[in-house]
Image (cartoon, rainbow, N blue to C red; front, side, top):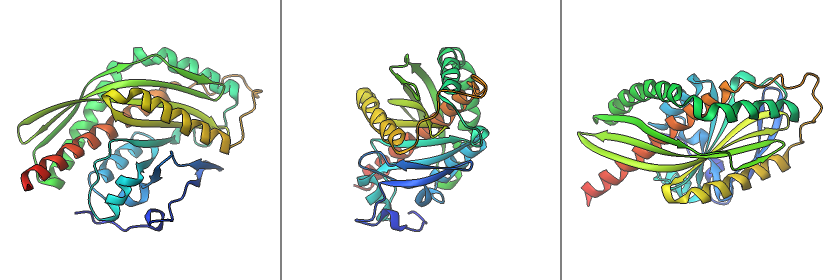
Amino acid sequence: MISCLLFLALLPGTAVQAEKILVGKTELEIPAPAGSVNVTLEIKDVSPYSQILAEAEQQGSKVFFYLPEKSAAVLRQGELPEPEHFFLLQIPQKVKDLSYSASDFAGFKIGIKKQNQQTRELIAKNVKKSMESLSQGISQDLDLDIALQVSGTVVLEPHDESINMLSWSMYITYGLQVEGEDVNEVNACTLTYLNAGGKLLVLADYATQDELEWTRTAARAWSDAILAANFQASPFPPALNRRGNSALGEQAVIVILIIMTVVVALAFLIKKRRSHSE
């Protein structure tokens, strides 16, 4: 059972479609993905969401979590949801005070494209460390023997790009062991880097393996809404490409893999408990 306060943002008829989020000293207007609401405040004290938000901060990212309205309604009832889809907004803390021009962002995109295939082994190593720590914490909280892992990723080439946006997808294979029972699942994710109002944002949306195109369409719609709500960065930088830190891309992927693995595990545990109670 969830021990959390239910905030006005999740009350029927009061869901906020756009909100102001401070990135450094810049206030951005962030519309929620269509049909979803920001539930970050509601889940920050709820295990295992609290652990993954804390792990994201430790990795250097502030994360906002968006659930479909149907799943948010489950939260309002004091239960853990089983979301088939969810969305994440990451703000890399290392660069929150920097301003990106379009040319700065172009340099960043070049680094990301080179990095995607080259750093998968390093990402897997870092994710493994986090999974071991989270497995222990969640096992204690839920009084179960749980082991989490990301057993494989298939990174696809970027499929959508504009001056202030770069989007690519991946398939993620998760391994989960609960009380000696092994479970493997493959899901799709589309990750998008945005330069919104001169600030670097990372978006991600998650769905089942056969819904890759859905993640891409949803990602583009959310990206377009955020870019339309904020001023477009100037293409003329004081110093060309001084913001080309592609290591931030690795960090973003690590955070997404950690969060998605735990959410998949949580959905499995909920289904398992339900089947035992029937």
